Length: 352
Image (cartoon, rainbow, N blue to C red; front, side, top):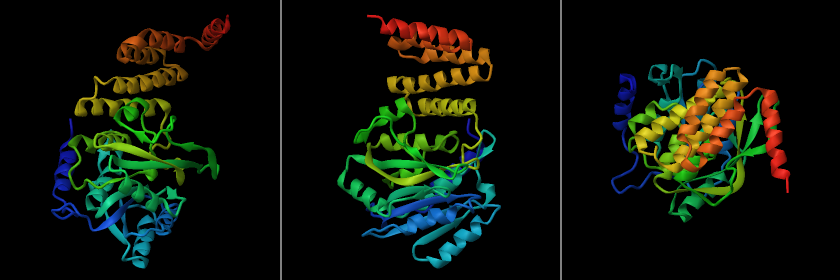
């Protein structure tokens, strides 16, 4: 049940002035949406990585600053002063913040940026990430120009572990590489598209559905909404860096918390978009319930692990129910027994 506050935000956004004319033409090629809050240590690098972009078209930088308590607002004001023709600054107030499950989010900031974007395409960047390729915007805009079947495109992203101050060798992206991804890929595998890698066609300020204002996670549902409009293309290059740190959106959350947030997100998507009966949707839920079994077991919560296991078996597609039952049963065993059972299974597989 959505709160009156969320409904209020929904009505406000629906009344924001449209940046496209009646023919659907936009004021420029690309709008770069940057949202930031308490990121004084990172925001300059993020903005510099956008300003370094080399394009043969006009683009704007739309900065949504969420009334930071550190020096972030002063920094973005200085950037806007130095680049007045390129940067548009939206200075928000904390009274507009949307709380989801008792936690302050940047959802209002994000949606407000979308609805003020004047570009044909929108690229996303959060204030603690940055782009590493000066041709990123050009490559993605060219891709969408040339691939009318795609509603969006993305690329690989490097991970920067802020605690170690080094970039990991592993890259963030899909486990299976293909040129196009569709709705079933996202439902089955979850989110493999980093926010800082995404560019999509501007369909705003066509209002986002009311449920989007209160859903726990914003990125996967956004990708799913795009996937319902067309394929999502992969540009097989690495062009951005995602910074992992304790102050990030998921910093400090336990594995149990992550699983529960993902499952709540799937529940809203299933009910709101009529996806619950899709095999790919059930496979996605199964994956998170199975992870939750292991997370509860690691914390010594056997009863919670068993309940998650029961839900996993219940949601598993018909031909996977027995296998799922066996897997969650083994997962709930004491460590010594788990190891013994797994060695027995491995031994059987190796027998001629």
